[in-house]
Image (tube, rainbow, N blue to C red; front, side):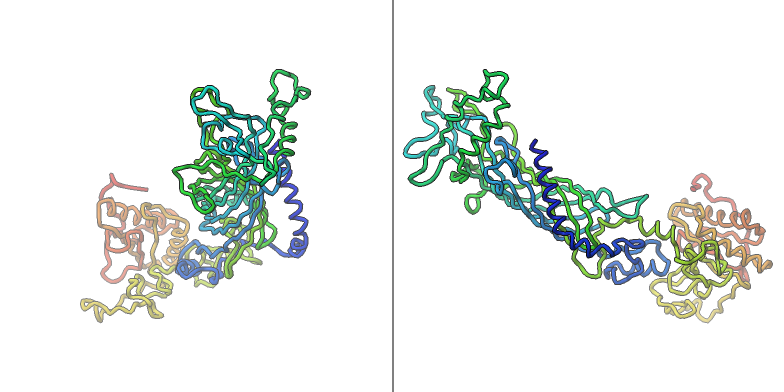
Amino acid sequence: MIIKNYLLSTIMGCAAFLSNSANAQNENAGKIIYKSAGYDVTDTSLIPARRMEQQRDFMKSQYDFPSKPRNQWEIGVNVGAFNVSGDVRSKHLFTAKNPIQTLGFGAHLRKAWGYVISTRLQFIHGTASGYNWQPATGYWAHNNPWNKVRVNGVGYATGRVYSPTYSAIPVYYNYKTNIDELSFQMVATLNNIKFHKARNKASLYALVGMGGMLYDTWIDAINGSGANATLYDFQSITSKNYNNTLTNTNWPNGYRTRKAKNADLMTMFDGKYESAAEKHDNRLWLGRERTFRTIFTAGLGVQFKLGNKISLSIEDKLSYPGDDLIDGQRWQEWPQPGFGGSAMTRDNDTYNYLSLGLNIHIGGKSIEPLWWMNPLDYSYTKINKPNSGGACDIDKDGDGVSDCFDRCNDTPLGIAVDTHGCAIDTDGDGVPDFKDKQLITPTDCQPSDADGIGNCPDPECCSGKAISPGCGGITEGAIEFLSDRSKLDARSMAALSSLSSAMRANPTCQVVIIGNGNGSKIDQQRSWDRVNAVINYLVDNQGIDRDRFIFQYGQNGNNNAVIYRSAGEGDEGPSNLPPPFPNLRRD
């Protein structure tokens, strides 16, 4: 029943909020919240300086992934139902003496660090209250306000500890607790990675965190104040005949009497909570004798998108303070006479906050928070609509890359290109290989000139020597392999297809295939494997005569690259060599 009432209160709150937000929604009705891949991946104004190098490589087709853009912060406010789960039953909005004493409010600041994980700093203030409908005398002989309170010298309990003649009037435990919590949380978005849908209108998330809380708890043990103060006449309820509501009339505290007793207790209590509840002797107290505790928290929530910068959230969060006095009680309800009072209850208290929140995104030159973005957006958009207005069966420059995907659709015929249709630039100096007169320019010698030659002087041994020109249209190039592989990928095959075309156009030229790597036996064997894979592809798939190749491996250079060039004067060698360490062959 309590859960149903909580849900009812939440739904009513949502309805009220949405009705107040109708105008804002109407203003957004004609706007497109989602467009294409969510944002323009080529917009460098969205990229922070520390990630700009990756973005430049992406724009130059030297890296396949765009940089992560800046994303906005979220600030939010919330209000909701606040209750404690402990030894005393907590009341809710419709059953409390004062409904305001069952509510909480809060604010948070949230930032995404990836598409799934974000962090949140949250403050919550809440008040919980409640009372039991069953009487108890377990307060006797403990440092408890029910045991200490006096009005005109009269209290609820009399007698000494261990005395068989003690007297303790049955009372109805009640409390009001004020809690302030500050916590730092890690939030995981559970549903933004979508394979069959662009994005969600709702974001489901889970959170865990820790922080600190201050609380003070009060008891309503005295009716009225000043000269009019009296003890509560609890005997009028414990002695009242509620049997007309029971099937079994021998048990006056039966569960079926709870509604009638709760109604009588609500009428009896004045709701002033004038007496400080029992506190720990070994815990830190701050202002108004408030107790500090470290807390652990966890929760689930869902956000509903109302616009580009606003969302509505419903969240349920449970906090564990490791304390049994949040509701002011930690003793069992009935003591055992002659044994010094009752024992402590078994479990610590927890408190729960079920809230409705309004969230706003802030930040310029940023996209929406990443938990609203689908990281697969860009990939699926490019696959489905690579270039607006282009035909995917057209390859205008004949480089083997459809115009749908071709970023350089004017590449000269016969030039090796990458998967984006742009001429390969092995050393990344900005000069494509077919124009580069110095194919491998060290990074320290860049920037290069228009011919791709670095700014480092020639060593004395090589100064003044002429560079052998290529054979006709066969230019130098490189095939890149993964660090532990010797299989050709699609990009490598496209480059070798261009090489085979150039070799057919120059049937008298030989080509030197050079594999690098000599640091170990494995490196040497992998170098041989890669050269062998390149030549086999050109022979078996492109129909080039094996005798036109010069097989070289185990050279110095980039271990993951196989270089090809036209054979110059003095270049001689076999077209096939036995593997150096065949037992170490890898894929």
